[in-house]
Image (cartoon, rainbow, N blue to C red; front, side, top):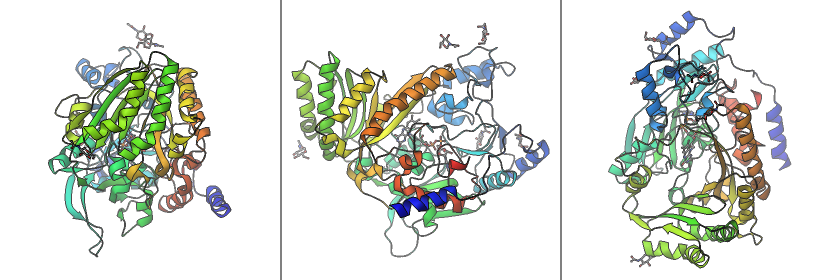
Length: 558
Ligand SMILES: Cc1cc2nc3c(=O)[nH]c(=O)nc-3n(C[C@H](O)[C@H](O)[C@H](O)COP(=O)(O)OP(=O)(O)OC[C@H]3O[C@@H](n4cnc5c(N)ncnc54)[C@H](O)[C@@H]3O)c2cc1C
Ligand SMILES: *[C@@H]1O[C@H](CO)[C@@H](O)[C@H](O)[C@H]1NC(C)=O
Ligand SMILES: *[C@@H]1O[C@H](CO)[C@@H](O)[C@H](O)[C@H]1NC(C)=O
Ligand SMILES: *[C@@H]1O[C@H](CO)[C@@H](O)[C@H](O)[C@H]1NC(C)=O
Ligand SMILES: *[C@@H]1O[C@H](CO)[C@@H](O)[C@H](O)[C@H]1NC(C)=O
Ligand SMILES: *[C@@H]1O[C@H](CO)[C@@H](O)[C@H](O)[C@H]1NC(C)=O
């Protein structure tokens, strides 16, 4: 332990060539002629990026374009198509310098934290040129895919953005392996960096395959999701997304295009499975292992409403005690809780309704005996895709028409290890009741780990994931025009709520992709004992910290 700690301290304080990057408006920023020649080197694919609501304000007001912004503003797929939009709108602003859809035509529209230029890349060489140019001029760059990052890591003030959304290939393999040797081949699919789960789920379904993909299908299949770990409704059955990555194609900070897999660049391969997006290079494609489709699944939407908080605490206590056995039975999913209600969105792959019903019986009988209203059902679906269309896409033929994002929220999270669920003093439900009733953090939700997620892998995935049963989330939302003071207050409150769970779970951590922006001790919390190795790899593959983001490996020096 002491040895590890001292290596850690040495690397952490090693002198290095690190300083803040050049941003637009500074003297170091390249002149127009230099940009024009860069633009030629990327085939004229450089674009000026405006905040998405810019056509709703003078001097750029354009009624038709503004109406398109108003109707698209809450669509995650529309937002992905806008090079300047983020899914959580507050990341587009810099303090109160922002450009709101909701404010009127004469209200000011600031560039905020929206990058000034982007390269709309479609080929590896565009990425390589952008990386070399940024390196030569020491520019602040960001890698932007879908813009889902909860910590705002896919945008930066005054930056050049490498926009990977239009890297759109999908190629299935019957047997993928990294060498011609005798190692085992896997059924797999290689997807370009811009592919989102929606399209991949659809094509996988047609081939009777499943993958460990995002619960929200607008998330990217190759960017931050697999690189940070990637938790799926199907994870208890087939593991995290990172557990199933077979290869990445990457442009590294020196501008080289390399493959990272179990046969070559194995350190980079290790780091890109759990070490976080935006840190080790620009991923051009990822190869995911695929699995045979489910036989069927049981979906158990349930809503419990208690007459008062005391009765509810009884239900919540029973629910938490029951979770290890629900996990062992194969359930996964989310729950959402207020101080008097609990909503379950639980899935059980490859099982029948009578089995599902037996495992939930203790919860339902408790509710019946205690005058708690139950609205729920057990429904069988033939495939994950059928369930996805019916439940997540509102019965449409795809989720492309969803209008559920483009909001501003904030949360803090903690992986809750299985051991805490059997605690005889019921510390977990007590802490949850406390944050809901005393701190007025209205709701908490989580996904079940367990099953295949418990199996350790030789990757950078936070070891805390292997013992975790829940990723507990303490969320709050605010209006898009909230003041900086209001946003800070909400951020402080969720951190304060999460502190209770941190104190209950020493040695655990949280998920780098779904974490508190102000996470204390983030190196330990996001990466656990993997941090020193990740740090070494980062220093080797990116010695000048070209790729940098908030609380990403190596970002201590920014
Ligand atoms: C509504 C919603 C639902 C979600 N659901 C889930 C879920 O079910 N399970 C889950 O695990 N997570 C979920 N997430 C979190 C999600 O995994 C992270 O936000 C993730 O970082 C998104 O990656 P992205 O590439 O789509 O987004 P982006 O915001 O574009 O990128 C995220 C990070 O990855 C970097 N990055 C993107 N592309 C590349 C690339 N090609 N090469 C290198 N770095 C890159 C970016 O620079 C940034 O740091 C959800 C998020 C939202 C907003
Ligand atoms: C880059 O070049 C293309 C083609 O000449 C041009 O259309 C585009 O406006 C240029 N981009 C910028 C930001 O100047
Ligand atoms: C538009 O917004 C600005 C700035 O918020 C405000 O000063 C002005 O009164 C508003 N105008 C109208 C017509 O609502
Ligand atoms: C980006 O490139 C794609 C593919 O060439 C093109 O369809 C799209 O219109 C471009 N987007 C912008 C904003 O330039
Ligand atoms: C349901 O599944 C259980 C356990 O998996 C099995 O014992 C039972 O026979 C099945 N029932 C039906 C009706 O298929
Ligand atoms: C913010 O927007 C709401 C409506 O969405 C409005 O009622 C309120 O006055 C606005 N607040 C500020 C500070 O502009």
